[in-house]
Length: 161
Image (tube, rainbow, N blue to C red; front, side, top):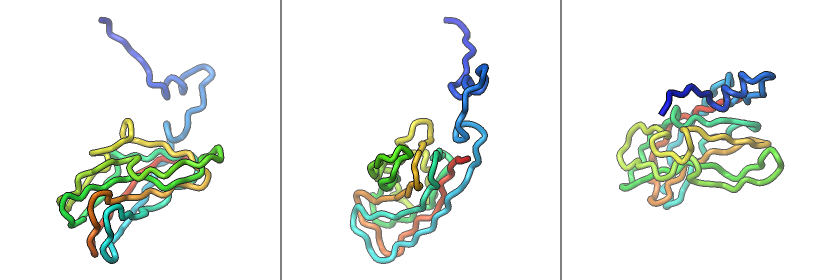
């Protein structure tokens, strides 16, 4: 084998002559935060969910490895899925809701702080949304009930502009 020196796709595009356009979500975009606080009001059966917040429209890169939450879902064997509601893509088509498109089955059996990047479906710890009107992110307890007073507090980091 030989030693190689290569460039990422994004760096190749930025250093091409003439340079190719690089999306702000890939280089020099602004990192934003979506903070959420939720205390369950009344018991919720399995598949109950919480709308955490809405990402802005346009191209948005969610940084799952930099996002986390304090979860105190007191039902034993609790797992958390993180996904999105259906939305309108930039081309006008409908993108189907996916309740575990970002995180599938994060073990939150014991109350504590959890990194969304610990058990994720997203390649490289990020996910890109391209929507007309924004995307609602949703946490779901697929397998167990959410008890009255259970807490979910945290933040999602994302890049725009």
